[in-house]
Length: 437
Image (cartoon, rainbow, N blue to C red; front, side, top):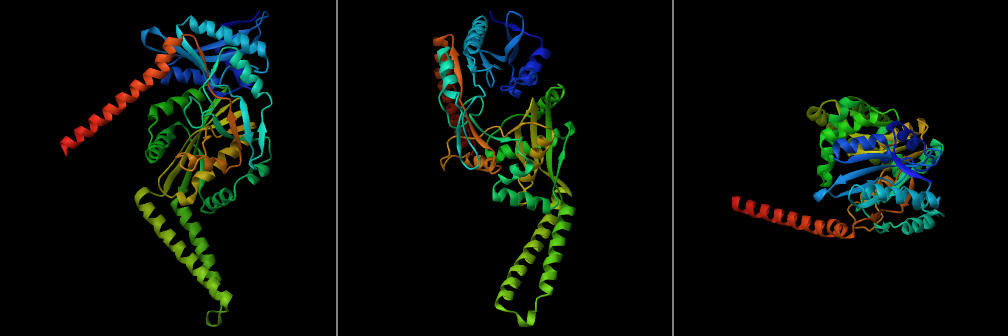
């Protein structure tokens, strides 16, 4: 007979970290502690044990308090179990639901890290042969599927790009798009640099996050959010948060450009200016164009140096490591000098870092399923696609409803009310502005 019980945090984290198929940072002790501090959620570290008190499954359950003492529970990226073992799935579901009902929960949400289908860099499709059976098992347990959503409507992205780090680095690079290879090469040619930061660099990381958010028209978190995330994940031996900073050093870049300029001037000098053939004239025209473009570039970098100084951080990315996987959790970029392609170089450096760490999977943490041309997030998708990872689709979200009436109010009526309040607030604000002007 199986039973569910609270287990010691260290035991829980070791089990989740070492699980062969379902280890995920969103099920880690570090994420549970972070959610408690910064998301006002109550974490429960639960283990499913057999008669010998051996763990056969585990889950981080996050409790969200609601009005009138109601709650709901969320197991981010699902229970840490073997989903092909139907009896384990049924028992875990039954025990978790009993636990949730005891806390006056109106539903339990899961979104298992189970791949439905994936496409490689050649767009060749691979279907998970177990996906349909797992889907039916969850349904038979009483879970209600929330649909095959295409954007970011769910708690976690339903699509992502993943790179298999068991491949050789040469094979991984070979799958990069042509433009990605060229842009990384150009960034290196300009003598840009990618370094690993520390906690003192969170301020710079946050600054770039605000620039990115303003550019993309969204606001996420304050500086303390990222600081706390970094502290908690690096305070646990089983998890790690690493900052990668992509930098340009103006003087070094100008020297690199001046070196290129010298090469071009030498090529021009050996042309027989007084007796040019048609092909030589075309070459002179092209070289002259390159020469003046480089001169313009040098002038521009000198202007940036006056405004920003010699050393400028253009990209700052936060990578989370847990178990045998890594996730590109946050990526931010400056508004200037995009033509240095430091962002591409930064991605390449932490990809190489993750492979050198012996990790197995590099996850770019989120993209879209709706690839229509008018989707505002299509650019994000196309950028991540350029690195040649597998385009992965997960099964999606599932809710086990324990109080249908309150579930209807919470999931249907409350969102409508909130939308009306926001719309009214915006209208009142516009009217106030009109009065003032």
